[in-house]
Length: 168
Ligand SMILES: CC(C)(COP(=O)(O)OP(=O)(O)OC[C@H]1O[C@@H](n2cnc3c(N)ncnc32)[C@H](O)[C@@H]1OP(=O)(O)O)[C@@H](O)C(=O)NCCC(=O)NCCS
Image 1 (cartoon, rainbow, N blue to C red):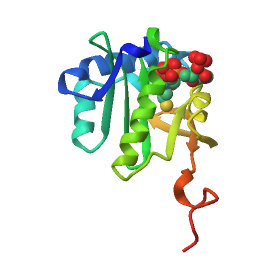
Image 2: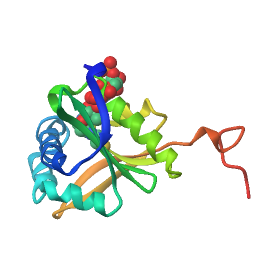
Image 3: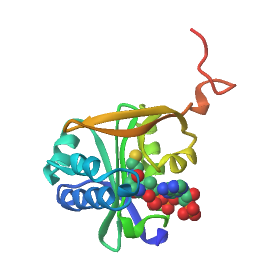
């Protein structure tokens, strides 16, 4: 499938499919790691228009399209990966990797490379493949319900000869 996938910026008409992919991932893939109350708090109140408002507010979005259908999306802002979701039936076919690579390249080109993220439970091993390391547990509160995650961070290699920033 990977050869047929193209990555492009989100357009207005993609919002309905993005919302559907996000909801399907929460209700199926992530249901293995979160209970019903957490998934319900996470999905309630989300609308397609919300993704477009986020884009207007500065969040960058890319979508993956296969055979004319949106099959995944990624978003980021200010050096943080904010979301990466692949339609459940299309997972583990390389689409997440294509989206992540494209987002990392675009953010770096824009001068604000992605160095942190909040990984949903179960997604950590995927991000480790891009050099992210687990920096401990975290959580966010959605509609009064605690949603646990893993905080991950990576060091960019070009900072100095040894991979660490030069001292001031
Ligand atoms: C996590 C996610 C974005 C990965 O996208 P994907 O298209 O399925 O990933 P890829 O096919 O590019 O995976 C490449 C490799 O990453 C690793 N990988 C991917 N998902 C993994 C997972 N959940 N657990 C462990 N390893 C994983 C595997 O090594 C995989 O190679 P393999 O399939 O040959 O074993 C996708 O599974 C998804 O949408 N999950 C549900 C939502 C989610 O958790 N998003 C992250 C929110 S922070």
